[in-house]
Image (cartoon, rainbow, N blue to C red; front, side, top):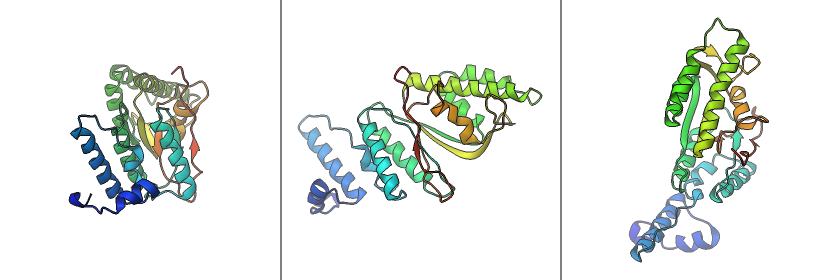
Length: 242
């Protein structure tokens, strides 16, 4: 450790007390991985928590416990979902960057990154292309018109979400989703199936938690709470058959 710019004394603290900076823990993992390679073995993947020390600093104690349980389920190969709401400048980028790095270190967990706000078609169409349903999504978007009844606009918009959710479920890769408060789709207000105008989070909700609706794959939209925001809540699990 000392030869690599660290402090030798941190090894004991990390192993026995889980004490040490993220940099020291990452340095120790690199050393262990090199020892594996020297004897011809494939190193184990780094634990997801290795990259999340800085992310946990923006969470309170209770939120940290929820976050840790979420990570344990993720590392165990389960597909947890979580939605946490929060205002501007509350650490959303820190959390999502740390999660993206942690997921990329796990086998078959390279995440899709989706940042929604403003005109959401600019993010949804590239996602649809990556999921090989771009033509179908563009066809649905082309049917939207400001002269349509609101219920028809809402039905088409929800059909776009359903198509994307089914494609994501089929692929099985994680989704990191960050949503702002408001948005539009092809310049039109976001609407639910009944035609009621919705904020962006409410518009998305049937796809990750509604009864009987397709569920996004592991929905890791982690936005730390602001004083006026609801507490974080699990969004439920993917149906086993999805």
